[in-house]
Length: 176
Image (cartoon, rainbow, N blue to C red; front, side, top):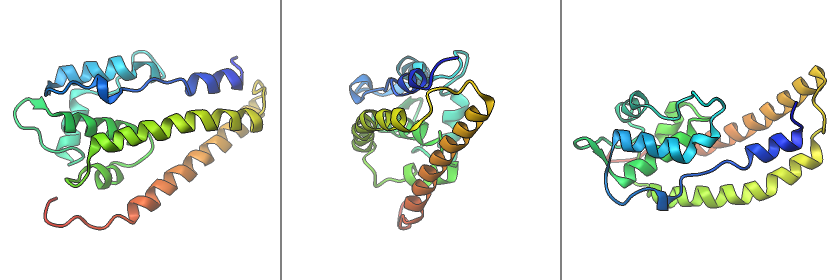
C-alpha cells in the first residue's frame, strides 16, 4: 500500500490545461474532447474513465451551464466555461454550477486564470499541512476509515463554503 506522503504527492501533482493550450480559434466537439483528454487525462482515477463526453457537453448546454452553441464549433469562451464546469462538477450540484457559469457577465478566461493561480498557491500550502497532521500509516482499516472520514468532512466544509458564496449571488437581470 502506498504511504500517505506518496498519495499526497500524486494527488497534488496533477496537470492543468493552461489557457495557452486552448487555441484561439473555435473548436469542434471532438477537438474539445481531445483537448480535455490530453490536458487532464492524468487526473483520472481509472484510465478508462471519460473526463468529458459529447452527451455531457450537450447536457451542459441544454441545462444552461454554458452558453448555446452556434453551429458546430465552440468558442474559446465556451471552452473556458467547460473548463470551469469540469472543475466545479467535482463537488457541486449542477444547479449551483449553473448559478456560477450560466451567466453572461463573467469573463471565464480571467476566472480560469485566477483558478490556476489559487491552485498553485494551494499546491504549495496544503501538502506540508497534510504531511504534518496526517498519520503516516493507514494499513490499519480503522485508521484508513477514520482518515477518509476526516478528509471527507474537510471536503464538505469546502463545498458548504462554495454553497454559501453561491447563495449570496444576486439574481441576474435581463439575460438568463
